[in-house]
Image 1 (cartoon, one colour):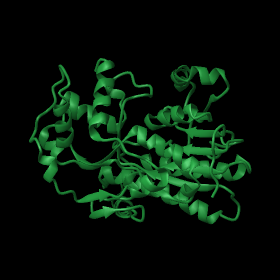
Image 2 (cartoon, rainbow, N blue to C red):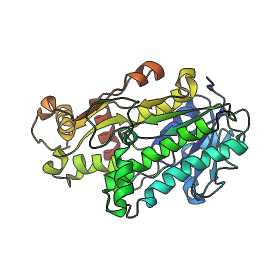
Image 3 (tube, rainbow, N blue to C red):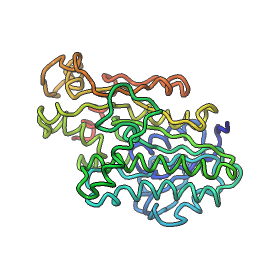
Image 4 (cartoon, rainbow, N blue to C red):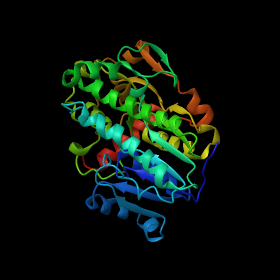
Length: 346
């Protein structure tokens, strides 16, 4: 199956996002040339300064794609690239009408693939789409989940309830539908394309902040939850006790994107990128054991996570075996996040 290596040119959509900036950094450090897309010129300055040397050397450029749902939005951006990392997709729990979150996810994904088909050129070898564990699991899921699982129940709930569906279902449906249309597009057009598709499915993603965030209020959803739980303590212990989830370090997700381009066997596959499962008590325990000077962490019920029975767990063996990822452990991730956010004065 096709694969790429540096100094190939890679298009990264949603270049100013939490994960995208990590991906760009890792690819540039490996010698790739990057074209990133942003929604407006105002998003350019931070990234062009962050990757100043690469921009001056012609290794990093940005193009504006103001509306990823518009027909032909990516027509110019895809021209001449060897691979694509499609990370641009909304992540929030604020949609009234489900279309507010589903349309950007689905139309953005199908739109970039349509542009690829028409304009990318024969040099394109691989398209990697950032999906989500939400495309694999639903609240009804039980046991060990693998890449063979699909979340169809959230799609059904949204179709049946519309605006009345819960916010989690709306988000999960957007990720399931976006990934499904990508695989359907490839199957439908397999006689016309020489490139292949890889999808990556992470759960909650935590890590130090590289992208342009000037206050805690601007944090992306995963990191906002971490900040609220550990720093502000606005989430009560009772509220946090209801949350069980998979988690992964942002640096591992970024490495997954790099390896998804470079490993031939990754083509045509989907991967769960999960570092493991956690309840918030685990993070409390880890941080209290680290005993960071002048930093108070909730105590909760120490050790409660060790006996916790998860309703669902995620099998990450495929990512380890095919992509060669060695996932971060909680102590390193937690310490790096705390040091980073404290250095920002938060």
